[in-house]
Structure formats: C-alpha cells, structure tokens
Image 1 (cartoon, rainbow over the protein chains, first blue to last red):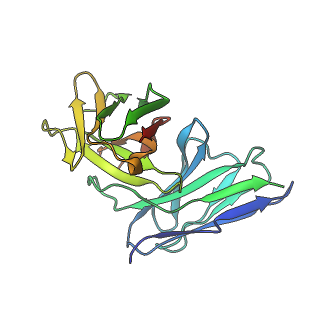
Image 2: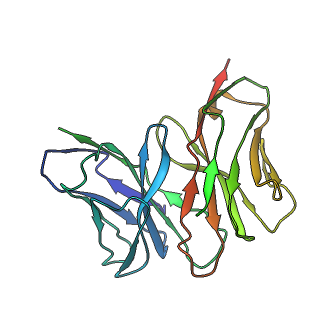
Image 3: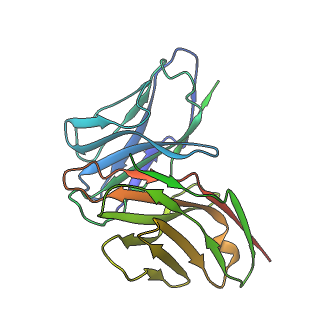
Length: 114
Length: 117
C-alpha cells in the first residue's frame, strides 16, 4: 500500500546533539512538508519541498534543516540551535500543481529532550 | 498571510446527536481549498472532508457535512449521528490555489471533540 513512513516513532535528544527524523513516501508525490505540533498550537510549517534538490523555509524554520536528494525522501534534522525541540513532528506529501488533492500524513515522530 | 481560527477549544456531544464545529479564516485570495482533518489519540491525521472555494455547493461525506459561507469566510463542520469513534481533535485547514504557490496548509489550533455514551 502507498503511504508515508516516518521513523522513529519516538526520539530522544541530548543537549547539544543533532537528531534526524526520517520521512519516506511511495505515493510518487512531488511536494513534501514538515510540520511541528505543540499542545494547543495546531500544526505549524517548518520546511517544504516541491521538487528534488529544492526546499523552502516555512514559518518556523530556525533550528531545523532539511534535504531533498530523492523524490521519495525528505529528512528533517533538528539541530542544537533549536532550543525547544520537544514536540510531535508530522511529515506530509501531496501532488503539486494547484490540484485539490489533500496532503497525506505520516504517523509522526515524538521528540523529547533527555 | 492567511489565518484560520477555531473558536471552540473543546466541544462535547451525546452519542447519536449532531454537533457543529466552527472555523473562520482570513484571506484576500478568491480561489482556495478548505479541509477538515481529524486527529484521534493515535495522532494520525485523517482527512474528513474538503471544499473548493469556487463551488457553491456544500461538501458532504456520509455523516459529515460543511456549511461554507464564502462571503463570511466561515467553514463549519457538522457531524450527524455522532459515534464514539468520532472523538478526536478536529483541525480546520486552508490551502491557497494560487498557481506556483507552496500549497502549504494553514491550520487552526483545533477543537477537541468528546462523544459521551
């Protein structure tokens, strides 16, 4: 079945450490997105990518980095510069081009500080 | 920038009854899409229903329907014959239809729906 796979499900970060969240999709979608979810905040966009080797900052990109070397993959690195990384992270993808197709979401990764 | 507001942090409904969740949005665009997503305790985001702004007819999906008022920038979700499995966080989301745009979703802060047996 086609879908989006996020791993790991739970992740712990030590002070000063960078950690990488994986997102893989087999839906042949062009665009991929990373959202952060905090209690009472809804989802906020971190980064997005519409084509391979190109990505754009979202609303809260500071302290995060991404890469898009393959269409299927869009990993997110939470760097040590992100001072409050504890949150639930959701990856999404969609066909790009003005269609009304909804974004499909992965099951998420919960990141906590040790 | 577009914004989405859900004014009801929490709602409750009796099983088999009907409940309406409110959503308003602010945009200067004329063409866009609106979505309702459901997030159960498993945290998975599930699409409930979507509406194209150029369509005057309100979207329906089984027990779920919307009341789309474009001039008022309102997009409420009605759940009929509520079931225990409907208990979840519900998010309203906006997406621009501008060609070449990011197609990102702008979310409201969510409404937690409790269904009482």
